[in-house]
Image (tube, rainbow, N blue to C red; front, side, top):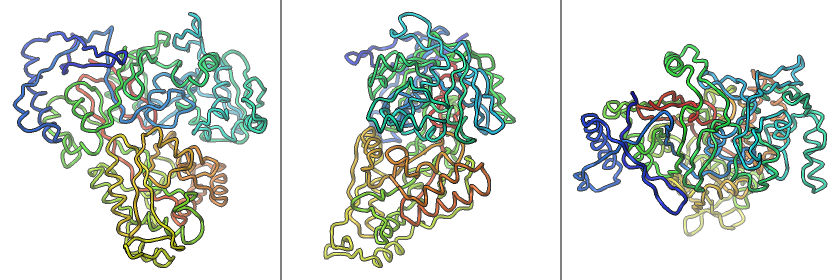
Length: 635
C-alpha cells in the first residue's frame, strides 16, 4: 500500500501566464489529523523562529493536502538557491546548472553512487577503458543501448550514441567559440587537438570538426581510441565531468548558439518545461535504457542498508522532478516544512532552527521522520584579490603589501561563527579535506591580525588623510570594490568584509550584481575582490591548484593571477603522480599565493541535507555537479 504524503496546496508555474493547483486526494482521517497537527505546530514554530510572520498569526489554522502518488507518476520537488545559467554542458560554469545537466546528459564515465572514497565506473562506456602500458592510449568501448531523448531534430527515429558523438563532444570543449571555463580538462592532453584549436584561432575561422585529429580515433561505431601527449592519472576523472556529457552533432548544429536552451542528452531525464531563473520540470527520458540500482556500499553500515533497500530498483524510479529556484534560505526551509519540497540543502542561516547545539536534528523534526545527512564538502571558500585590478593590482612591493593587509583583516573565525552559524571548518590550505594532496598541518601566513596589517600599510606609504582614510602612496584615492551576487543573503559577507577594511582605514564600496553577471565579470577579469568558492570536480589536488594557473584566467582562475614562476611549478606538478614530491610543489605554490597577496583560503562548509520521510535512496554525492535525483524513489 502506498503511503500518502501531506502537503500544503502546491502551485506550479505552467506557461508563465497562469498558476495551476495540483489536485489532492483524501487519506484516512486519523492519519491526516495527526499529520496536520504536526505540520501546523512545526511550520508555525519555524515561521515564528525566523520572524517570517507576526506572533498573532500563529492562531490561524493550518491545513494540508495529500497529493496523489501512484507508481505511474511519482513527483519529486527540489530547489536550487541561484538561477541556472545554461544547460549546455560545455558552457557550464556554476554548480547548480551542472546538477541539472547531470540529470539530462551522460559522460563516458561517472562515479559509483555509494562508494567512499569516490570511484570511477562506466556510464556511456560499456566498461572501464583499456589503457596502454605507457598510460598514453585509452580505448573506450561504448554501450550500444544508449539513446538520446526524443527531439524534433531526430525526425522520430531513435538516435543511439556512437563513438563519433564522443569525439565531437571532446573536440567541442576546446572550440574557441564556446569559451568553456572547463577547457582545462582537456587542454594540452590529446594529441593534435590543441593544434587544431590554434589553427582556428589564428585563422579567425570556425573550428573545423571534420579535420582529422591524430589523438581521436573512431575505430568503429562503438569504439573510440584516445591518444594522450603524456600519461595523465586524472584523465578518467576529466571524462566523468558533467561538462563532457555526450552531445549529438546534429542537435548542436540545429540549435546553434541557442543550444543552452535546448538540452538533448542521453540521461535519465529530459527538460519538458522551463521558466528561466524560476522553475524547471524534468521528466523521465522515454528512451533511457534499463538501468538498475547496483552500487558499492563498502563497509559503511548506512550505505549497506541503503544498498539493500534499493537494490534492483529502476533508475529513474521517479517520473517527474520539479525544480524551483529559491534564493532565500528562510523561504526554502518553510517550503520544505510545508511539504512543498522533498529535499533541502540546509544552509547556515537557518541551521539553528533545525539543528541543536551538537549539529543534530531537533526532536520535533525527528518525530516527523525527517532524515538528516551531513558531510564536510570537498571545497574551499577563499577571498581573492585581482592582481591586475587598477586599484589594488600590481606586483610592486607596495601593492603586494596592500593586498596582504586586506587579506589579513578578513576574520575567518568570525565568518564561521556569524555567517555560517558554526556550520563550517577553518581550512587554510588550497586543497580541502578528503581530496588527495590536502595538508591538515598547514598554517597560513595571513591569519587575522589588524595591528600587523596597519603596520604593513604604514611601512609602504599608504598614509591616512585628514578624513581618516588611507590613500595610495602617490596620494591618489584608495577604494576597494567588493563584488557579490545580489540574490540570496550575501549582504552579510559584504558587511563583514567592510568591518575588516574599516580596521585598516581603507574605504569600502559594495557592488552587488546578479549571479550570471558576476560570473561573466569574473571571466572578464573585472572583479576586484570577492569570496570565491570551488568544490571538487574530481578528488585530486590538481582540480584546486588549477584555479590559479595563468592560462586559466578568463575561465576558472577567478583572481586572474598570472605569474611565470607559479605557472612553471603548476606545469611541473601535473607531470607527477600524487606523493611527497608533488606535495612539496603544492606547498611552494600555496605560499606564493599568500606572499603575493593573491588569495587567502578561509573555510569549507558542513553540508547538511534534509529529506522527507518518504524519500528513499538519498546519499549526498562527494563530487560536485552531480544530482542525486535520478537515484531516488518515493514510498
